[in-house]
Image 1 (cartoon, helix red, strand yellow):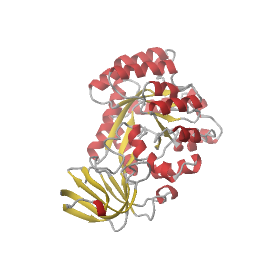
Image 2 (tube, rainbow, N blue to C red):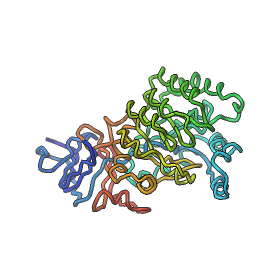
Image 3 (cartoon, rainbow, N blue to C red):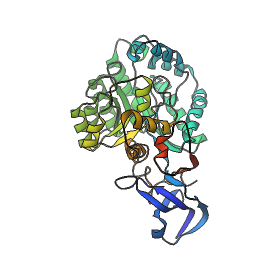
Image 4 (cartoon, rainbow, N blue to C red):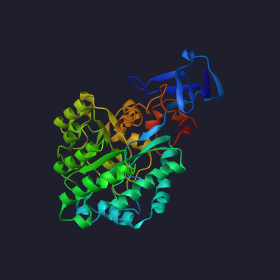
Amino acid sequence: MHCDTQWTNARLATMAGGGLGLVEDGTVAALEGRILYAGPTVDAPPLTADKTIDCEGRWITPGLIDCHTHLIYAGDRAHEFELRLAGASYEEIARASGGIVSTVHATRSASEDQLVSQALPRLDALLAEGVTTIEVKSGYGLTIDDEMKMLKAAGRLAEGRTVRVVRSFLGAHALPPEFADDADAYITLVSEVMMPKLAEAGLVDAVDAFCEGIGFSPAQTERVFAAAAALGLPVKLHAEQLSNLHGAELAARCGALSADHLEHLDEAGVAAMAKAGTVATLLPGAFYFVRETKLPPIEALRAAGVPIAIATDCNPGTSPLTSLLLAMNMAATLFRLTVEECLLGVTRNAARALGLLQEIGTLEAGKACDLAIWDIGRPAELVYRMGFNPLHARVWSGL
């Protein structure tokens, strides 16, 4: 059997099956960007490779997946960080025209080129840690032109870097100043004008919303989801971050790929997510940065069998985090996730949260050959270390 590249003398964490899928003496073979074989060397078919790479006992995992980011934005919110250190709450800052709206002003003022140039260093930091797929949300433009500008900028990230970019339309992120007294009218604009135009332009892979007291109500969120369904677009939701509006139940009822944050999730929400197969995407960077004290219901999610993903939530206001490795450490330390849960959370379950499990997230024949090769003695090191990057090599689509 012919292959383009074969990686030999490797240890594998395939993430396939029920756990990490560990293989002590493994081989990965790729042909035209796809995995031809991944598993024990002893079981590999006879292979003739154009190129053979001796991994010298290093570990190979699937390329990491950051399934929730707001990577495209202009400016920063360091001043708000200072205000929070002085005692101001996230809600107080948001209601005083800070928060998301302050980033909206900066992003509207930036050109598409400027948005790309400001985002690339953040992206590069993630890629340097083995990330091969990233989700990027809009939501800092809040007009058709500015949301389009953001989504185009997100797409351009994949032109200059070897990375898969998934674009989510988050028009229902915050109420723009020009609609300060009429949230329903803005939701009409999002649902009936912005979303169809952006989808027609091929700029949207999924639709997101912020269901929260300082965001949008469940009824408004449901209108957004109905419009997405009419366009055949999958949905996901920022839910139960600051309060319990039963957004996760709504998301599950609408067949959402994921519900994200979930600190205030209740038993009914857990049950609904389990029944629907909706992924729980946990964002420990935001939990840490805003000094949240209410933990997501980890034991309830485990008991119900809800898949758990982990992401950076990279954004300027509540999680200026560009390290998925650190996000795993935070998830383990703050949320008490296991090493296995953390690693599955940035591979298999992150792929599921993006609706891409058939394409990425595990080392299995037929999937994209996205690999991270690590200088580690055991997989736990990827979760255990802080501020240390043991990546040896990163492979995207076989290259």
